Length: 236
Image (spheres, rainbow, N blue to C red):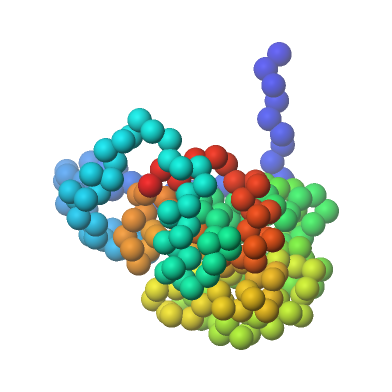
């Protein structure tokens, strides 16, 4: 008998992607490199020199360092955190799923305030948790800051106050667009250990195809995330 997959939540809606550049090019009789994308919140042109990038992939037969020490050190230096606060993932999306895997499950709730990034709802439901609108009683509070798609920016002091008012919850602040706004909750983690900040190299750095992101958390929360992350998911 073929194993049966676990049932999805009622009325579950999976994540849907826009058409790829190759699909759009074929539709209009163009080459993929002639397509400039302004619909995915990423720079439309590559921003990385090709030769150094090619040299960095000279050892494609090797697995990456499983601790990602060098990458974590670079992220820590960039954002002003300690290396034991950094967890890397295959883009912020994997880290969002990792936060859900770590802190959500049946009988737990997560607060999502729409309109916002749809993956928060999806990972919450996939873990068997309930999506709610209010933070009271939630195990996880998802905050996109600046928000996608509205662009609303909440002050770090406000989000730290939210974390302080909800000490039983993990407040996940998705700062995918931090470089466009400059306001960050990372310095607040020292005073509010229930804050987790997510960052990505997909947006301002123009590296969406490499799938590199990092989480900044208290050392304790970072260790919990790291215990649950897949091995060698980041190839860069």
